[in-house]
Length: 170
Image (cartoon, rainbow, N blue to C red; front, side):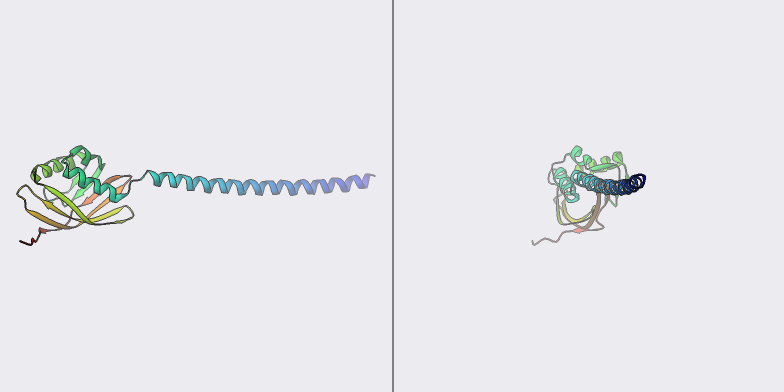
């Protein structure tokens, strides 16, 4: 009687240790699955909140043509960098960028127009060309603008270096 009880207790101990290790394995697998699902969910939420970089640049075109300085400035991050602007040296920060944008809008006059074409996006970088009409109705073509857009705001804009008067069919 004592022997049977001992064997039974050993079997119970073995069954108990197996179920404990099985439970630990299941808990570990569930924890990994929860972590993976949480990571995927967090990434999808982050990506859903990010604006398409080309949409930000296209909004600039619309805001510029409407001469809406507030809309323009809402597209720039507080610490944005603006490089190679025709009216200013390299600029850093909202105040400096606002000043040059106001000056730019004033120089465009009522006939000023900014049209983009050849827009390409790779990651957070947008490149495009544009045609600009100044207050004297002179058309300038510019190729090679480049901007970096993070969280729906322009953080860096390098103006086109290839700026020339557009050829006309006249």
